Image 1: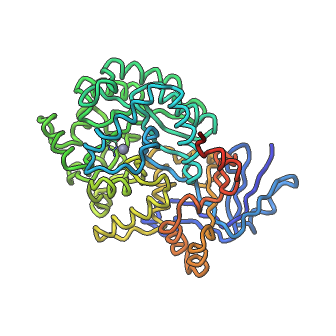
Image 2: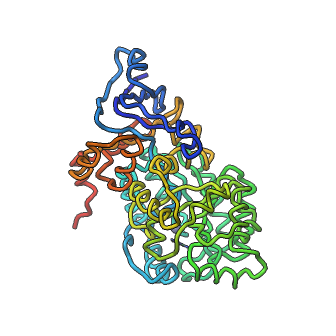
Image 3: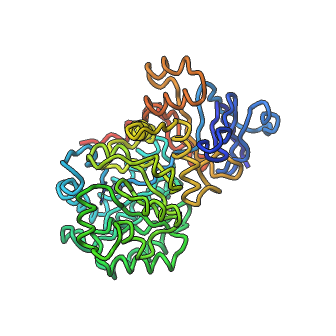
Length: 443
Ligand code: GUN
Ligand code: ZN
């Protein structure tokens, strides 16, 4: 078995650094040792160099920082081509851009083309796991999984369920949603590194019968993921109150159908009340905070103080194409500012944890991804503190790990990602001109 070692500065986590600062583990001169796609050891070079076999390949990345691969807990792959399309709010944005764009995914070849680009773009940004919405078409999910399986990337994805309040051409039914999702679970859940997520788009576009069917499938498959949107926009919240008058709140609709549990991930969670937050905490459902999207669509400001006080699990996500960047560094940048608007200081160390080990733990994937712990799948990113002239100047005089991470979070983007590794394979190199050229559409 070959052994590969990566020598650089290292950051990994042994817990939530918000609770115990020493949970952020940093080695100035460190090494990650990879065997058979997994981390066999990570720590100080001085402690581990002697363990390297004589035939080990040592990749010298001194001057750079290795961190676990980023986890984006909410993103729409079909919206790649409509990123940065402005609208006065969520509902007109869905009507004007989203639904027409998603229609094109009935064409398998189109879905495959976008899926390949999408996976490459995630990797270029250092994102090695994402929770991905496909379209209503089952072939869109097949296309995404095939692209991700081909790169051996750990991905969680699902076909959107939507049987009302959308154009006829994007509708399924309660029965077809059940049947198609069940078939996709059979084809993709736990195939290689792929995992399935039941994906009702949001309560307004599913009938009660469809939510019921989704809940039944969730009960049948307790280890599949569930993903949806909740409490993103004030008009949406009013609409849900009209459509589901018997429910205490928007979140309560999902609760009623058995869709709150561990491995259930809800995008946005802006307009929740304290009762809802407690329910998220009790059930272990995870909030995906999407700051670039929330600012772009004017949806509102996620309340970090209330979320933290309630104990509800929180993660960071891009929400492309409502979100304006694939980069989790840019997502941290905006998350910091959103928290600041609420009087909360969100440290860079905590944001890196939220985007790696914290997300993995909340998704029940901590034994596989999110850290550089031995036996973890070797998903990691090599960050370049000198990626741009400005980053180089700013990081030349950093005084602490937090200071360095803060510079990456506020000033970094895909340019700061020197390399990305998935299951020990190099799946992106910033300076590989050939691979960059091949990604530019031609004709
Ligand atoms: N709510 C329902 N669908 C969507 C979507 O595609 N994006 C966002 N941001 N919110 C939604
Ligand atoms: Zn979304």
